[in-house]
Length: 254
Ligand code: PEP
Image (cartoon, rainbow, N blue to C red):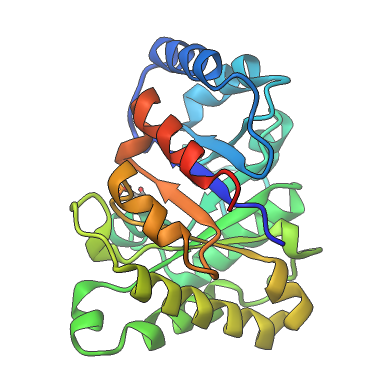
């Protein structure tokens, strides 16, 4: 039994004071985190101390959108996984398609970031996803599994609860286009099979595989209903308290 995870990726939005207002409103509306679902918020780095303060004791987790591939050192502008972990974060996104695309992050670099996140005690949310051309050529699965294999090169999570994989087709992120529930399920299943080949069946059975890409209250339930999809990585719809709350409620009791 895998507990669904609903994780909000705020990207480069909100000031620290806006984040404080969001957290307060969200916790007021949510009450307690309902049993049977895990909720996480992934704000940009300067908002993490605010998340740590406002979410303390609430049961809502938080994490970073990226971490450095280096442990420590003279890497101006970088943020170490250990710094993020020390704030009380649980997660770190690695390999988001925006970083792969705009900063040319390779899967080899993503594997190093994944390893640093694990060493720091964080759970990486490893993003993989195909561009539109790969899907149109019928090569989506091969593309994603190759990306997954290379992004996990040398990575040995201590257990299945220490890795989350997010399938995010590039053409669905921030575009309003969503994968069909069947396509999301087929890719989540292929990812799980690859994880089974890599880490064993018992591990793969317990790893959460999320879908991400233009999730909204109107399309989330059908995707979540698929057996291999264990929640969502949500961008735009996590910025407003009301829509994120609706997504969390849809995931309860899966
Ligand atoms: C994301 O940023 O991971 C994402 C899926 O964004 P959106 O929901 O806005 O498509």
